[in-house]
Amino acid sequence: MRRAGPLALLLAGCGELVAPDGTIAALDPAALQPVSEARDPLWHHRPRDVACPPAAWGPEGGGFEIQTGVCAYAAFDQPLPMVLARGDTLLVTLWHDLLDAPEPGTGHVALWVGEDVLWETEVAIPAPSAVIEAEVPILRAPGPDARLGLHLHNHGFNSWRFVRIDVLPR
Image 1 (spheres, rainbow, N blue to C red):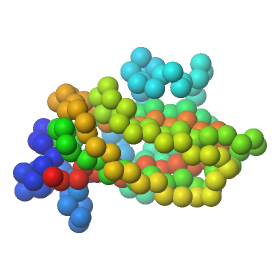
Image 2 (cartoon, rainbow, N blue to C red):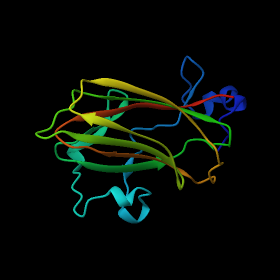
Image 3 (cartoon, rainbow, N blue to C red):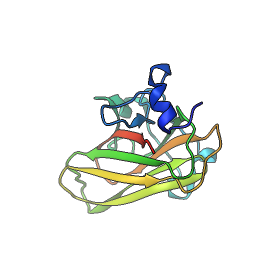
Image 4 (tube, rainbow, N blue to C red):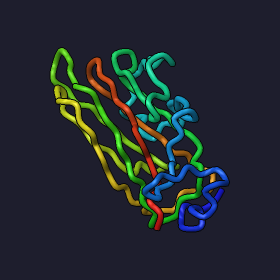
C-alpha cells in the first residue's frame, strides 16, 4: 500500500483512482461488505435484530446506496486502497433523498477508519433531500491493514447514498 500523499498521485496508474481535482478515491462501493456486531465500532447503536438484506444496499451511480425501508441499521467496511497518515484529510460527500417516516425521528451517519470513528452527523427526519459534505482530518495514523467503515441508522423508508470518500492530497 502507498501513502495518499503526492507520490501516490504520480503513481496513479498503479491502482489509485485519481479524480480531476487531484483527490484519491478511498471508497470502493463494490468492496463494501456488512460488518458483524463484534467488529462494529458503533455496536451500542445496533438494534437486537439487524435485518439488512443484500437487495437493500450496494453500488449505485458510482456510490454506495442504502435503502432503509428494509435496512434500518447498516454497518459496512472495506479495505483501504492506500495507507493513511496523521494529517491526511478525507473528503466525504453523501446524499439522501426526501427523508420521511410515520413519526419524526433522526438519521445517524458515521465514518470510521480502523478503530476510530472519525466523523458522524445526525439528520432530523422528516427533511428535504440534501447533500452532506465534510472534511474529516486523520488525527491518528491507522494501522496498515485498517479498514474504511460506513454506518447508517435511520427512521423510516429512505434512501441514502455515500457518493464519495476521497483523500485530499497534502
